[in-house]
View 1 (cartoon, rainbow, N blue to C red):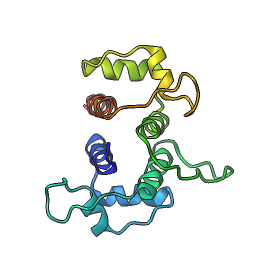
View 2 (cartoon, rainbow, N blue to C red):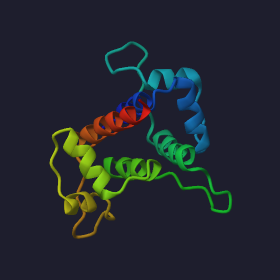
View 3 (cartoon, rainbow, N blue to C red):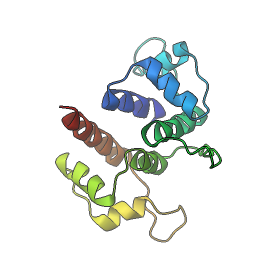
Length: 155
């Protein structure tokens, strides 16, 4: 999944402005101008669209964790890792304090059946015999389901 889709999904999920997206990236150590962020959240067919760089996405995800859970000043900052679908899923799981059962429930509400062992395989280290790559469809359904869940709790 492209980074721009994740940015747009998080923006919609949290119902926040582009200005807040810039602040979240800054929390993770990423520097981006408002104009650049506006270009990143445009759809591919819109004029002015730019692809969000991997490094910025990694810092944005770290910033999201700091925003939702707080930053422990006694610990070193999280290193930015190049985001894969698995890493995006993992960072969202940490930011929103989700357990395997929460992820399964979120996906089931979207009509996407998954077992606990399949979910745990997505969080294993790459190279582990049980590791499973997170596909775009899985991540899309998860983002959509998480948005629905968070919007329901706002009401």
